[in-house]
Image (cartoon, helix red, strand yellow):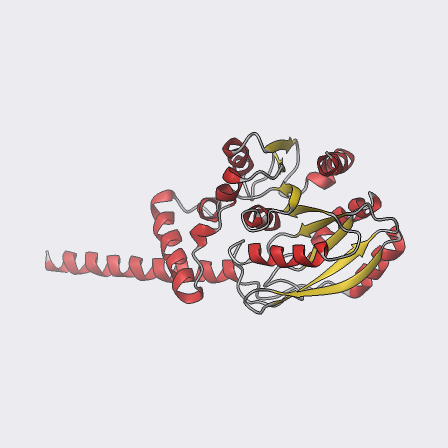
Length: 297
């Protein structure tokens, strides 16, 4: 009996320590981009030649002192409106250049920044909107101080879409947003990620809880506050939600949940055959028409 009891205690301790180690490992992987890809200026120069738009490198300093870097793309005949275009996790501004292409051709001025912790922007920790929402406010200030820019819009993919949604309580100057494959809450998508890796619910709960506790103690981030759902519920800004119906990364039910929270201010377009952030490539003409029509409306 004593031997069995000791074995049981040893197994319990091992499982506890294993859960803590795994939680910290997963949290660190989610909060950092260890090898950052970059966006060479040659790409912006090529874009300028192809579209006729001018480009310039722009920077803002976030509230916590982090310097953020981006490109400002201005068409030959601007229409007085600017769009902030935000990429997904692990990507750079290059991930939004296809969007910038059709928007610039529609005469929108487009800002494509690297999110904090990505590309050429400063910051080592990704907050999934907790700190990035304030960064959006700084970018909005930069744009609306520019001569001729009178209207502000936003478009984002995945994490970038979620950041834009989370910025709404502190950035009321948006006329409209387009959110392509956002998550409803970071907590919800964290459970989804573990399920996608074969971790069943009874075991995923402590992993997520310990990981969130670690992020709060180590980095001061309460990841439960990364909640587009809370922002969408109360917003008066029109939001076009786009989600690929074959998205296995962030499941379509996230956008359905967001739409259900505020159907008066949101519209949901689910794209058949499209995987995660692949709707522009799957239905390019329809995507471009819907986005520009949403902003114009």
